Length: 157
Image (cartoon, rainbow, N blue to C red; front, side):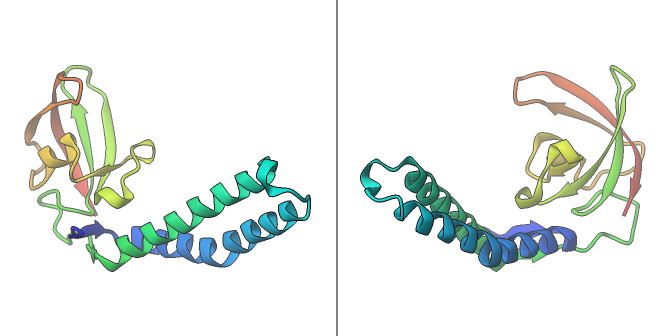
């Protein structure tokens, strides 16, 4: 059974745009690569053909994955209340050991992208901040076992 996936409206739009691109542009490009590779003759020893078929498999797999995510998605709207952190909230936390302040948006696992400060509600930090208010202190055990303490500095939509 597929579990529900939480998506922000922006995450839904990004996935829908990626799906459209894969179905309309990438499929055609990969199909053209396969056709060209077949023209080289014997496909049993044709690395270009193998690469194109592998790419085709990836494109089709990603299309299926996105369709599944969208079919089981619950679209979350940012909370109008900035009183506590919920899915879709943007917030700042301060590492109490280093004093470093970082901003994040709390999103569902399907659109998590830590490099772009979008953390999953299923991550250790995401689980710890859910429902917390400005000024609350949280303790997080990282996947490597380190214990880090944070303070919620601000919450925005």
